[in-house]
Image (cartoon, one colour):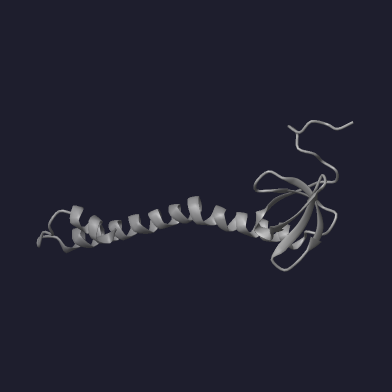
Length: 117
């Protein structure tokens, strides 16, 4: 990336050393600005989501209603080190903890699921 920026610069003139110094400072400044923008737009939001997911999994307890990443709505039966046993209707499944995407509040059901009577 730095080589590409340096290749775009005009050849240095021997007449004004201050101009060369200003041009170098400008190029380094642009690289720093691009790095900050990259961090703000890509890295920071990903770190925030990872912390939220870790907190969600740390607070998981038996009896919680959860949604998996594949869309299964179930109740947590037991929790192991790397897996969670869930029950959905009459089916009992053991899934990897990282597949738990959401903990539903109380007995909240997904809005597009039909209500059972």
